[in-house]
Image 1 (cartoon, rainbow, N blue to C red):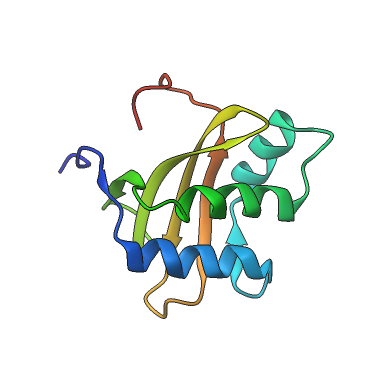
Image 2 (tube, rainbow, N blue to C red; image 1 turned 90 degrees about the horizontal axis):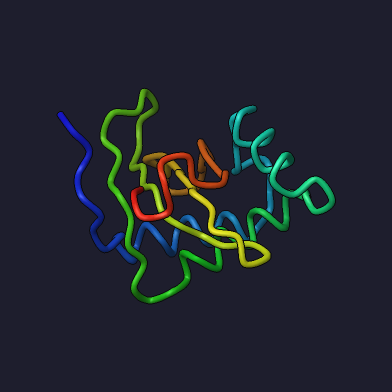
Length: 119
């Protein structure tokens, strides 16, 4: 089954994920090694967790967030891909919110690999 076209991301999902990101608490925020390396490669002088988490939260706090619902992930939960920005650079983010609504997994935080128009 193909991933869906971009849609408005549910406000409840955005609010829950943003809250976890703003906490900065690594007990509730997991990241893939690849997402960490990609972020560090894009911003070697500014690769702090709080910078990445803040940039992603800022995008999700906007009222009209559009993203792609990703349905084929191994982990349980709801995963969305979306655009966010840091230092005027467009970035691709993909985050899973686990069913408990308190833990997230950041799969992606990198510059676009498939063009800036396509999630």
